[in-house]
Image (cartoon, rainbow over all chains, first blue to last red; front, side, top):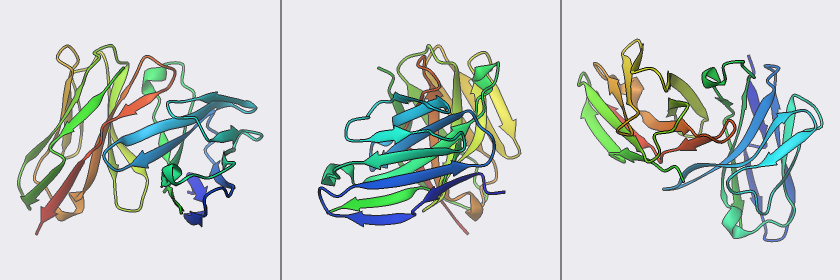
Length: 116
Length: 112
């Protein structure tokens, strides 16, 4: 059972470089999310998607772009990486329930990104 | 703006002890509250979800309570084991669409 898979697991970038983080889920979930986790700040929502072809901004969207071309994939892009984007990035997915209070998010193992 | 606080930030106990982790939130208008477990280098695993209309949820040795009016939740772990060592996060589902607001976590170490 793969669940939510993130690639790569680790990456080191130089300031100004670009990269794309890939998230794939095999649970046929409608909703997908990208978070970043920083020491002392908890997880913060970057962008999310409620379905194929749709995306929306979260709490800290600046400097990131996302795409959801296929239901099972959610891509997070950094066009010009900055040291402030050094963080651990988590992808999550969840089903769409009629009773949305039962919605549980399933998380990937994370991507550790360092921007020098 | 919803803010979630977890106290203590770290906790170290001997095996077998019962313990309580605390979570507080500033806005009582929530849909639900979740407790997660995070192991080093891994993602989050959902432990318990309490809906806003509920007072508590139980799963095995874990019991989570919710007092929405006072903005507090506790996670009770009975007869702790070394395998319980992890970081425990609480998150509230805010009034925003599917948005979870996370606390900064409590790092638990259970020594044999």
